[in-house]
Length: 195
Image (cartoon, rainbow, N blue to C red; front, top):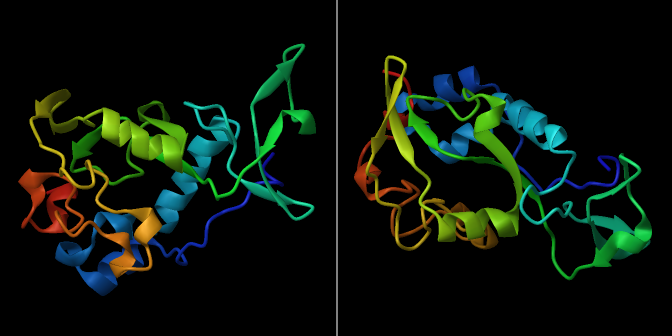
C-alpha cells in the first residue's frame, strides 16, 4: 500500500538539534517539533506498524490512480492482507494519515513515547477524536503518571491548529495561539520540554 500512498505537502524536516540551536528552547512550538526528522521517523514507524490504515475507520490515505482520487479499505482474505480495487472508493478530498498520541506527558518530546502510546488515524478521524474526547495530559513523577486537569481550547478542542486553514497563519488556532490547553496559554512552548 505504501507505494500508492501520498504524503501531504510538508515543510522540509530538520534535526531537532538544528531547530533548537536556531530558535532557542523558548521559541520552539509543538508544530515545530512535528517538523523534525525525529518526529517524522517515529511517525512513519507508527503508520507502518498499522499497515498504512486508520485504526478507527479502516481506510487508507488518498492516492491518485488513473486521474481519480481513491481510498482503500483494509481487507483480509485467508489471513493475508489484500488490496482489491473493488474495495476502494472514489473521494472528493484528500485524506492523510497522522500518528495520534493517546495522551500527553509533560516533558516528553513527541517521539519520546512508546509505540503503544500512539495510533494511526486519518485526518478526519483525528479531528473527531479531539472533538469527542479530552486527551489526558500527565506529569510524570518518578514512575508515576499524575493526571493534570488541563482544559482543551474550546475552538480547536486541543489540536492547536486547523489544517484546513494552513494558508492563514499556518492554521494556528487564534483562540489559544496553538497552546492547545488553557493552562498553557502564555507559557513558553518549552513547557513541553524536560526541565
